[in-house]
Length: 325
Image (cartoon, rainbow, N blue to C red; front, side):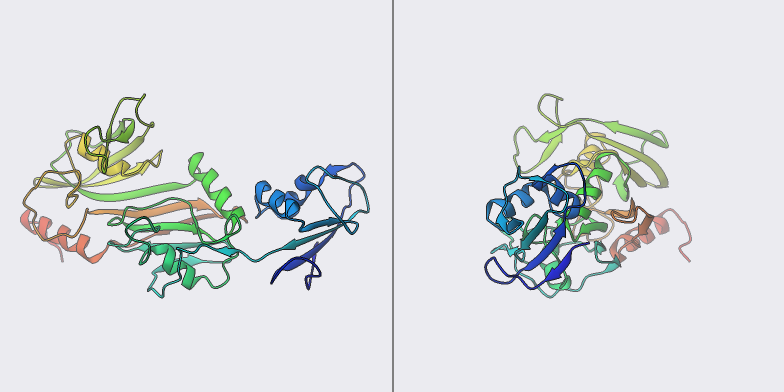
């Protein structure tokens, strides 16, 4: 275990950790420090070493310095560096779960996940920076770790990492399909079958660079979406989706490609008369399953449908003569 002490070297505020190397076989300094501080990437540890923040037996270490049994290592960890364009903002967050490593939110419509040119404030990240007073930082920067994203007008479950170790673990779970992401949407029209799989590479739209489209495999990235018909509602359908991949606008693009665009998606559907006024697409991340990145405990989260989504379903069911009581 490392003993936390007041810093005796380094600049400004920070934290000094002291270790004793216990192994009989030698090991590179950078590799061993990563094993002791897994929340830090190896690149970050090497930056600490290059900056003179690591000493071995009182002498400044090098990344390749071989450690031997009994060596005394000091690591001075500077505080996370704030990114100038990321400003904490007080914001009402619908928290489904939170601990020291992750936070799971029910994201509302109309809020972007991360700042970008044109909207550097009012995003979920700005609200998280204000909410997470104990945020240790990701890759040395004071910011939450975005594991996956939801479009601005897509609602529902989203998990955010609060440390580098949690971020890497959750990203691997997404890549290896250990984590599950389930969505619900209302689409135009009714599919001919009750379930299926859409496979189509997604890339930039050939004529509109603000949009994405199903393109050739040479020009796009593989994308796979599983779908199931939940309810027929006259000229509309309530459907569920499960993602194998996580491309930008994947469900929206795949639905449009099959001729069943999502209701309220003004980017990927032609102008159509809608049953009620909608501010965005009726796409909701209803369930999120994952293993806790530290304890490996299986966890599942569910976000209730937003009020506007529920209101649309009530109107469509009434048209069908279906009781909504």
